[in-house]
Length: 124
Image (cartoon, rainbow, N blue to C red; front, side, top):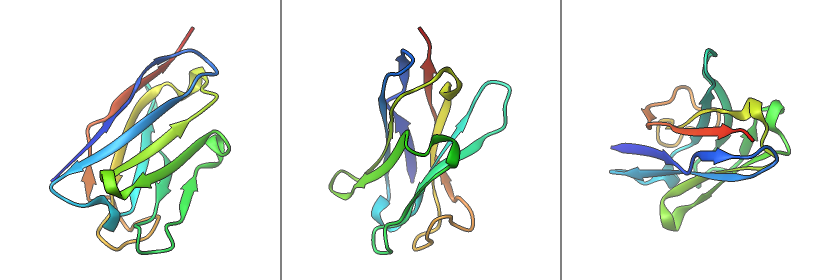
């Protein structure tokens, strides 16, 4: 069982990136998936969550990025996405995805599986 976040990179302020969270060894549609980030010298913070597909599929985004970040999933590709627009320097961080227990809606009681992060750097 493995999760992997990808799609990070260097982007200019105001730009966009789409991060992907892919899985091997399990099917993401049965899991609520959270996105987290950890900026240098700061604690990890939750950014968004998307409930497992057979629930209401509800999505949540933390207030600080509401209207800026969107979470979605493509079950055919076994992938969850985090679309990030209008990026700012303060969005610079390592971004992680994590899966809650199967069948647990957002926010799950805990995150069972964690992937390695992907670095997003917003700089001119």
